[in-house]
Length: 357
Ligand code: CP
View (cartoon, rainbow, N blue to C red):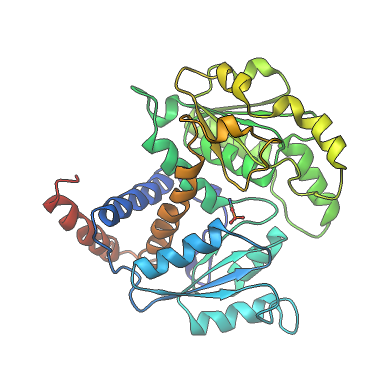
């Protein structure tokens, strides 16, 4: 979305396929440079504010590391540390932060909070996860998939199966896969499909704006040629190139007892048998944290087929790309590509010298 002349990263659906791939490619280029020992100072003198209404390991650590690696500084604004939603409205907090820092990321409980923050800010706002979606996770996931494409396949040829609860990570994965023209399946129990969880969110937050996942994915597929299926039929797992999962307690931790949760989801656990339904070479992915022994077995999480550790590392890859993309060349009505060219030059001069491109 655009607000106050600035483009924000609230939802991957606000971006074209080409723009999303631009972010992925920029992220992977910066990764290559850093791997070779060159830390491009693209965030020099810039400050990121990191608002967290919930706890986080990967999102918090990767954003802060990304800023320090690229010459900038990050401020952790954890629960209770700022006036947001307490003595000060979200709008006023956004206006104040816009005077003090260069970019803000926010992990919120209700999606509307990050939308309201972006509407008030004249600096870019990155959504670090809400109850509706998790777009920064998805940029890292696509980086991981691009780095591990099955031999001879393009992104558009890949089938991604999400097994388990239709969490916001599941929905976000479905939205980006369909946007990029891939095949997406949610294999999960009826009542826990993404559209069911969306109804649950709307009931919990009647004033919140929760766009319809299914409509978005249908629109994406019309444009991209991708496909999606939501089913409890195990046959749909066959032919997967990537099998992905998330925790089973999702958005409503207190809703079910442990026994009920295990009874409902046990057939959807990612274990050796489920992985064997995928294509030869099928890879395992997980946004983490995992509940070992529930959503995934130790055997799969720690196997050679597991990408979940690389995927966690690619949160950092994605954060670097997103920070550069949104601070350097995403102002509305900015007709010059000068900043974009400068970033490209900064990275490509080094990559060229090292034979990386
Ligand atoms: N996957 C993810 O967002 O992890 P954190 O909650 O630890 O940030």
